[in-house]
Image 1 (cartoon, rainbow, N blue to C red):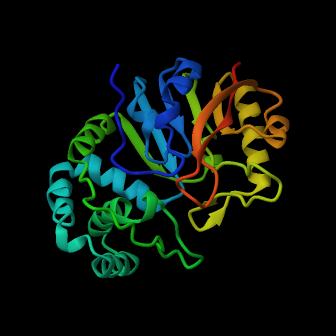
Image 2: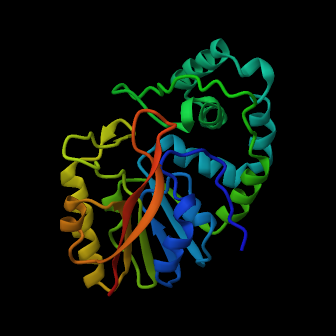
Length: 270
C-alpha cells in the first residue's frame, strides 16, 4: 500500500516508522492525536474519525484553512514558491511579515513557505513567540500541491484543535484510540529536551503523559506512545507493553550524521 506523505517537512516526523506504528495501533472508531505534528499517522490510517490536536496555533489554523479553503489556499500559497522568493533577503523579509501578521489566511501561506524554505524544515520559535528558523538554501523548494489536496480530502473526517495533550486526553468516549508522539526525551542525562513551540517539554510532563495513559487504559481506552528508548522512558512506561524499533535519526548538530537508534512504542492496551 502506497504511503502518503505530509505536505509539511517535520523534524521527528513519523513517516519512517509508519508500518511499525500501524502494526501496534489498536482498532477503534476515532483516533485522537494530542501531538499531531505533520500528520503522517493520520494520513496513513483508516479510522472513521480523527481528533487532531497540537499546542501550536499556527499549525492548527493552517490545517483548518487547508480543510475549508483548499483551492484558495493552494492558489495563493503557490505564488510564494518562485525564484525571487528563494533568496535569503526575501526569506527574512517574509519571516518578519509572518511574525507581525495577524491575518490567519496570510499567516497560513507564510507558514508553508517558511516550512519549505527554512533550514531542515524546522518549526522553532523564540521566547517572544517569533518564528526564528534561518534560511535553508535549497535549490528549488518543492510546492506540495498533491499532498495538500490529499490532506484536505482526508481532513473532512477530522477535527483540528489547538489544545494541550492533557485536554486532548480527557473526556474520551468509548471507541477512541490515542496515539501520542510527544517531543522526545533526551538520549542522555546531559542532552537538552527538545524545544517544542515556545516551551520545552519537561521531564514532569513526560511523566504526566505516562500517568494519563495509565488512566485511560483503566477506562478501557488504548494509548500508544512513541519515544526514545532510554532507562528513563522504560521507567515511565513500565505499565505498558514495550516494543523496540530501530529508526535512522540525526543525533548530532551535524545533519549529515544519521545513525540508527532504538525507539520505543509503548502500548497501553486495556
